[in-house]
Length: 133
Image (cartoon, rainbow, N blue to C red; front, side, top):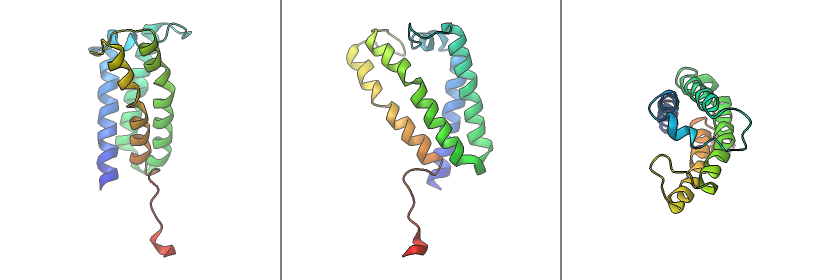
């Protein structure tokens, strides 16, 4: 029950974030693309938004693949983390984060997203096998 709720909330959050990438928060997401990243900022934001929408829909509609999707989404959250670090290091204001302290605190929420993906996928925490007791 809890894992199902986590999975649905994660799917909805990913779809919502993906939609935000494509429109309302596009400029803020552009601020997170590191200067050293080899692709154009706008392409990166649009592509990652589409990926988030697809991952969110997959989580919502393909429950029997939740473990694989949990790993894929956790990896996605790890892959976008350098953008959050760049926002902090470069001192870029976005998403209402206009202080170094605010940008630093945000970095500590990325592991929470990774754990959320793993929990929603039924990967973490590992359930005990009651048949072995």
